[in-house]
Length: 581
Ligand code: HEM
Image (cartoon, rainbow, N blue to C red; front, side, top):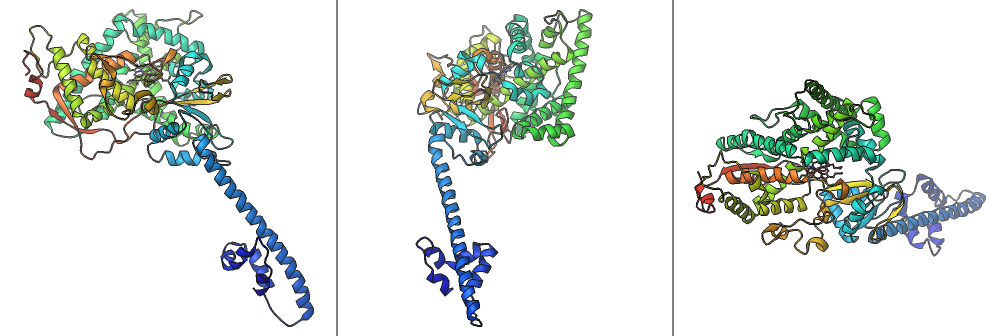
């Protein structure tokens, strides 16, 4: 030890003082050399001399190795400081090899959408996420309304859904509207748009909704009141909109929302297929492709559930074609019937596979978006009873205008023109969608090199994520009270005023604006008003409400509520000159 302590060098002094520390961390190789050099066996002078020489040599080696370690440590410290300082410029630390992945892993442990909003807030609305080297996780994330307008409208053709998205969801969605670009998309969009605006289609959608709400939803709710039990309102609303959209797409009612809330194989297969498809977005492409080849894990489940969806679709398509050949479809106005009667460019009828894709895509689009929006709406009402009071007042004021009719609780049905007049209710639903958009993030791909209005350079093939959830919480758009639930921000002179689609992007914007937007508002208003007129919806105390990480903003643990019948006097005070039973 003495020998070592004599040999001080400016850079090594402090380290040698702490030999015991180093002896713990240095490899055995160093350790044995130190032990040799510190031995003081006096038996041989020459051996002492040669030992001294070799000791000096070993020590020299050791010192240079120590310096290497110091150098390495210095490099590591430099990289750590450099990466952490990048947080200031790039929003997140960017590490060698793994990029920003560690921050993402930490971020998704909590509320991922809040985490994205916070990073975007720090970065003035746009940042570039760098994934691990050799992966395809790199993307530009934005919530800047100028970029949104550029992306969704101004340069729409340069930002398609893209190959990555299309190949990931192809097994489930095929060439349907949600998963199509270019001509295939244009054709479906035009046909569906014509149909969505036809009087026959509108009547079919409102009639089917009325039937579902009055014959199925309200009885199920009433049953829970009679039994005084708690229910998962999100599950019930999901069943309602699933049945409703199947009637719109296929002209068939699967019966998910029925007494006893039965398990419906088609609905189960659809749900499982969607969940397994989402898994592909968090699994490296090579791995899920290998799993698909071997029928393993979620890929095995996906194949099985897609078969369940296909079997159901095939049965309906075959039956509809038969009806068409017998000229028995005149009473029908669902999408399948419209597309079955059409021909492609070569004058041939569409293939069964393409018909299946069209219907499956519409079901996906309209299946859960309105129901999760309604779930967040009822949860927000529970926290804001003054808003609930005002909705009730508005509903009652509107029905008070009916000539010579009384309002009888259970049989009372809102008319379409009354639903349209419910501006405050529409404002409250929009406010819920602003804070909890059903599609919290969406994405596009860059076709050719481009540049956002905020200066962000976009290289061909880059993925662009637009953070709809974060946009609803931007002070620059909504003001200082952006996190508060205030339906009044949507009203001028008691009339609902819509906001630019590039600031309120819950329904997307530009040529790919949600096709079902008007119907969705009607559906949500009709269902909400029908429930609120009859019941107070109380969220079960301490029930945990957090978003689930999925394509749609589900509540992770559902929405556990208890319903209470409305007190007649509560309604009566708002009904001018009418009687409420
Ligand atoms: C609150 C309810 C709803 C919300 C928030 C909503 C939101 C959206 C969003 C964000 C998109 C763009 C998705 C994308 O391209 O990646 C979209 C597209 C679409 N939505 Fe909705 N939607 C709702 C209800 C509905 C309903 C009830 C239907 C049908 C009955 C529907 C039909 C569609 C269709 C067909 C598209 C594809 C449009 C296209 O790509 O050209 N939506 N919707």
